[in-house]
Image 1 (cartoon, rainbow, N blue to C red):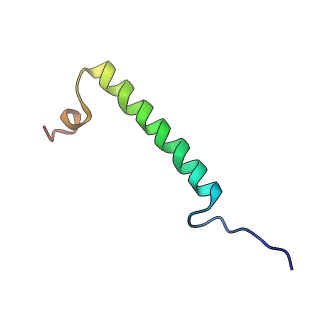
Image 2 (cartoon, rainbow, N blue to C red):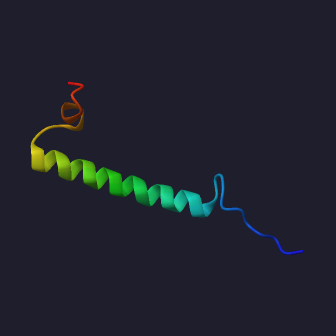
Length: 47
């Protein structure tokens, strides 16, 4: 019987995509702050 790796949970596949999306979100957040001159919390109306 073949050993098939699942695509759910804490797998290498999931962690790789989680890291990539986190880096993308961070870059988008910093870019938005630079372009608008406001922090993320100010944009959301929290501060």
